[in-house]
Length: 240
Image (cartoon, rainbow, N blue to C red):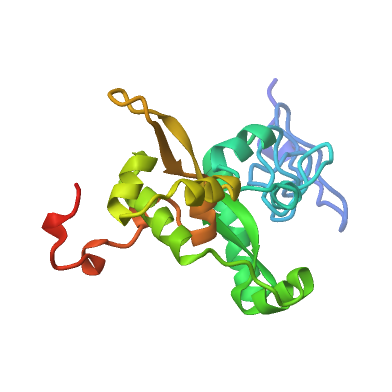
């Protein structure tokens, strides 16, 4: 005989603070975030993931100098400008990262008013004394004495710069005077170097060096000033 509804026991009221037993098959509730991993991105200041390149101002994983420190260390010992690709190969970093770091360092030195600056000259980078500090350096190194090229040497150097590769005979024809002694002086000072032989006359040809560009603060020969404003009116009569 079936029970009537009014014969069933009345439901028990829960006591304050008591939790009801879970229903069959129900999943117990959890506090927000409890037992679950956060899907959000890492907060600022956390360590980068494996394989991520370190910032320029941070030491690489596993220790070692930063990119900026490594560049400064190398450039302090070079005796001529070093190309970006050479620095990238030595440091095993992408060339564009090295180029950006070099320009950042140069801007930082200028902004800080350091006594030296980092310049891109003759296809590479090198530290130089800042212009307003040059007199102090000259006083310390040379005791106020400066070694200057003679007028003949400057004329010869200009002919080589604008007509290179050029032979001694062609230089003498342009200047109107023998220039053998002056050429030897320019070669000894590292401003001019041999550049092969003329295929017809077998004469030795000469060209300017990277040191010449460095001394003039030029990136390449295409930055030489235009020669036309300095030519005489009877330029057509000169030996071409």
